[in-house]
Image 1: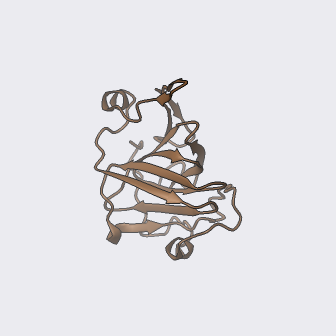
Image 2: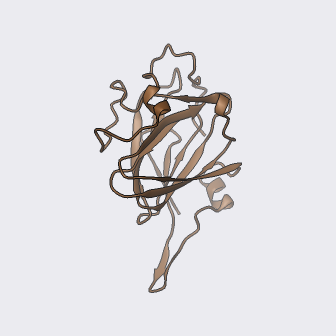
Amino acid sequence: MNVVTTALEGVVIIEPRVFGDTRGFLFESYHSDRYAAAGLPTRFVQDNHSSSAPGTLRGLHYQLQHAQGKLVRVLRGSILDVAVDIRKGSPSFGRWVGVVLSADNKRQLYVPPGYAHGFCVPAEVSEVEYKCTDFYAPEDEHGIVWNDPMIGIAWPLTTPVLSDKDRAYQPLSRDRPDLPDYRGPAR
């Protein structure tokens, strides 16, 4: 496995070692000892699996009291997966990283707690699976509007299919009371 750092502290791309032949392929999608050696969490409490139609955008989501680290991968299709640093006081506040994850490239993205997360499905039905370091808590659900001009994410969609909830989220602002505080390097 190869771990690639990104411009955002703690957000990393994981490239698994894939063994393939005429029958297909095999790779370890998670190995706690290897993830621990790379400085990544090894305790995940919930796995989620979503299927999204072409043109769908999900995000940008986060939880505050039950902040979740997410280990994201694609089982079918392709997505642009995005992490945004929303930690008040962080040197990279408001900056984002986007990575193409696909069933073909088998890459994963780890998004630590304290970051907003979202993804879009540009071309084909895509299935996404992600592990979470804390449980989903609907009462603790928060978000940032997907097209916030301050963040300036270069989404490959101009008119995405959104949920009503995602459409109604507000822009990022340092004055928002529902943002996590920066407490040093992300983990």
